[in-house]
Each structure stands twice: as structure tokens, then as C-alpha cells.
Length: 140
Image (cartoon, rainbow, N blue to C red; front, side, top):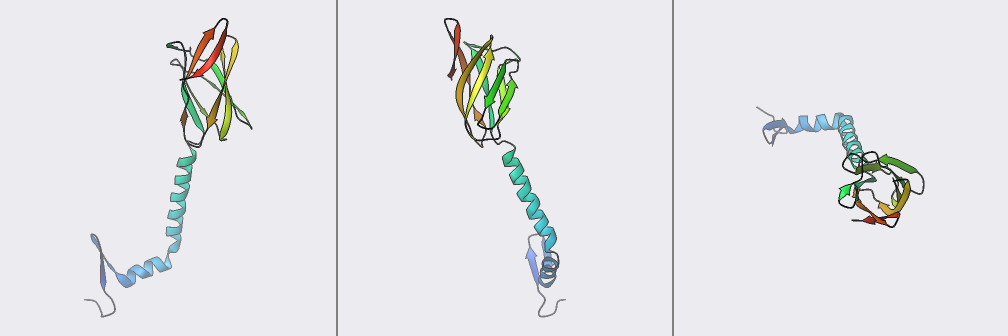
């Protein structure tokens, strides 16, 4: 039995004394602040883990370029090297956003093109086209 100024609050499957509920929250705000901080940190970490990811496929004609084809992405601040896998796929994390230059080193030729780095992951598929003895880079 409860006194007149103490009532029960029903929060779903639990019954909590309203005075006790206020007392618990009022005396222990630190755990809630810590939970909020942890949730904020996890949200920011998850968002930044994909920041500036550039990925795609490089092909020569209909076939992917070979494994370990070297490429690099140059931003205004840094150069990010990478290599392709056996399917011609590449993946590079570029921290900066903005215009960048991709250079693919294929058959002793540096072949360059322009790309854009964003905060969200971006896919850039490329085709190497041969004209005479030189290759050029075309976005697919």
C-alpha cells in the first residue's frame, strides 16, 4: 500500500514508484551522460570509418587488369598508393575531400585521370583504351 503522495507509474512491463524513479535519475546523472557520450562517439566513429573511400574496377577492354597493378590517388595534401586484386578491383581511403588525381601504372605507362573524393564512399570504374602505343583512361 502506498501513501497519498506516492503513486506507481507503469512503464511497460515494469512498475516504478514515481518518487523512487525521480530519486534514481536525480542522484545518478553521470551514467546517462556517459551513455550519451558513448553513443555519440560510436556514431561519429561509424561515420568517419567510411570517410573518403574510393573504390572501383580497372579494365583493359573487357578484361580486368592483372593483379598488383599499381595506382595512386593524389589529393592536395597526400598521395595514397594502392594495388589491384586479381579481378582489377581497388580500394583506397582518402582522408581529404575534393578533387584528386588517379594515376594507374600500366605496362610501364602512367595513365592519369581526375576524380572527386567525398565523405561518403565513391565508386569509380575505369577502362584503359589503347590508341597507337599509348593508353588513355576513360570513366565507365
